[in-house]
Amino acid sequence: MKHFLVHVAGRGVMERLVRLMAGLHQHFIVAILFRMLTRRMPSAADQGGAKRYHVLMIDKDTFYEDVLASLGASPDVRVYVAHRVMVKSIAAAFLPPELDDNFYVSDELRTIHAKRNYGAFLTAMWPYLTRLLRIDAVVSANFGYYAEREFAGALEALGVPFLALHKENLKSPGRMDFFADLYRSRRGPFTGRRILVYNEIERIVQTRAEVIAPDRITICGMPRLDRVHYWRRHEANGTANDAANDTAINTSRKQVLFFSFTTKTGLPQIRRKSRSGFANLAEPMDDALAKLSWETLFRDSHQALYRLALERADIDVVIKTKPRPRDYQPVIELLGASAAWPKNLRLAYKGDPFKLMIAAHTVSGFNTTGLFEAITAGKPIVVPRFAEALDPAYEPFIVDYETAASYANSGEDLTAKLQASLEQPVQETELAAATKELLEKWTGNPDGKASERVTQAVLSEIDASRNG
Image (cartoon, rainbow, N blue to C red; front, side):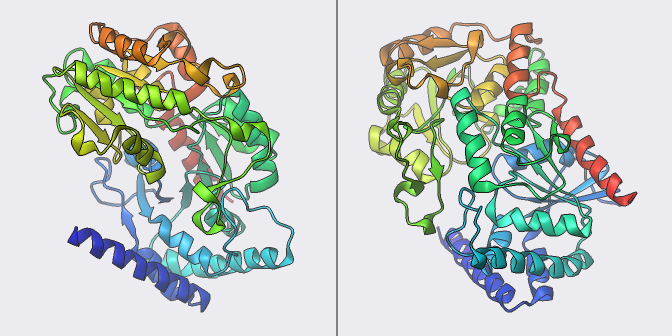
């Protein structure tokens, strides 16, 4: 706890210092602070020595795994990881506090001038930073992060490629229309070099919203899925089994992994940052969509996992949530403090879920990319499909895993199907044709080569910039 408090206190001091120095237009000092909060990505492919390409990534959960799998695995690339607090702190010195990812488009003169001043500061600061650290390109996890919007434009004006390796690609049919409108009316056009997306669905949404010209968006697939393809292909002879040892509760026991969801997962929401003043960090919507909620599905599904742990003391059950309080707190409120749970049930909300997933025999969840990773690994998949999920009003907002999953028609049936799945064999080394088609549709990665495509796309932009 002491180390944690020191870390938090130190981060808070750094945030305030960066904001102060940026506000005073101390470009060189901010560049030094930026360098201090930037680290080299540890990678087996980078053991030192000269590299042909140097790429700066702005850190973000899950995005780190995508970059590590692609650029981080290239022997020609050195990746530097910048803490997101750095960019946000600089932005805070210039941008009005009400701006955020989903409220960036504005015709107010005060806001327009603030954006210009922010971009001008970044333009002046960049030469100082690149004297301290060679950077050939910058990659971000999303084209729409508010603190990075002017960063993209400033670098583009300097001839430095700024690319978005867009990681939010899971759009059900209903969410496609919602996000096309949100992108167009609230986020606006991307001013960087190129956007890389996982799938055709996201490409359609972004081009329809006029975020970017069609010739500057590339479908590459989900890079971190490559490691799952590799694991599946080598699992049969045991060469990959050790990867789960430090995460599984007990690798001699069968394990069920449940990717938790909330009452709003996959439903239309306009998320806002804390300073916006909106309750639950969501802007109210007046239409019928605002009333949609997976309330019963959430309750009965999580209780089904609790019941499974009670009924099967011989197995282990893991409920995996995202690391934000708004994701794990509802689970605790429903099931009680985790300390009082059955000993074979635990809550995991931090870290990369890959090891949890490959250690599991069966994986369950709802409206999550995690299930496509489990499908790729050849795991039995069980999806709750009852309560609100049977209401036609909710159908457009459900991700369909087709024949790759079995479906439970009640909470009790979910418990029963999870138990029955423990007797199912694991998938063969090669995936069925229908499964590959499903992975192509949602992840753009049926072949385990997305990392190659991402790396080639980024390095091609660097080469093009060098060649003028």
